[in-house]
Length: 313
Ligand SMILES: C[S@@+](CC[C@H](N)C(=O)[O-])C[C@H]1O[C@@H](n2cnc3c(N)ncnc32)[C@H](O)[C@@H]1O
Image (cartoon, rainbow, N blue to C red; front, side):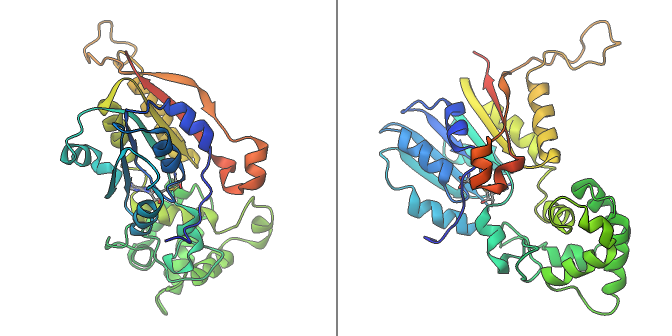
């Protein structure tokens, strides 16, 4: 996997946010090309422990090759970060000092046409981050009924032409299954009027592809609980850093952090607290976005937002 290509986003900012203690315990829930992981492990010394997780075998292989230049204990786990509790229990790790989530897909996944994530390079409709998973983009596009397609295009893609795209997909697949990303792009292009496409920021297929990808990998539903589990495992003063790439992910992060940083969650009209919720973290600073210099070098960074929370002392 030496050819694994991915430029880490908000690299220095995320590493600073984790406030690394050389003999601490750190978890990277989204290894990808191991760019953030390499920086973390370089800062660890003997006695430090690193856990890296990814559900993509390619990322695991890349991390195994890259994370060798350190005296820290390295644990690389192929799994979904929604299983963080079990992963740490299996490793007999009770508390950690920092956890990073750098969400979404890597450039390697997008740029490898046969992984089927790309609306630019033609490939089989796939989009599975975990190649062992059964559900693929082919199943979503060819087997979901029209109402479900319309719903995911609206909820996960915020695509206002989603209803028409769903109609066009269902019409097309009556004749033959939709097998490639190129075919899907052509159908989207036919469904969205030319004038609208011309005035859309970015590729006209971007939002539909995002929606299918989120559905295939169940990307959004697992976030809230994963962030809460992560916060639970933090030592006091430990840091949770999350990089998101679109408003749907960022909303979950913002709301979960807010909830974790709030004492009582009872409705405002209840005079006495009955929920007994106690805040467990404080939010550190304002959300961090990449500067122009980073965006000029890496356009993928454009929509990134880093949020940081610290476990209460
Ligand atoms: C943006 S990349 C991470 C890049 C990495 N930080 C770097 O600097 O090279 C996101 C990675 O997270 C993985 N991923 C996304 N959701 C996941 C999940 N729920 N469980 C495990 N891995 C996940 C993807 O497979 C992908 O490799």
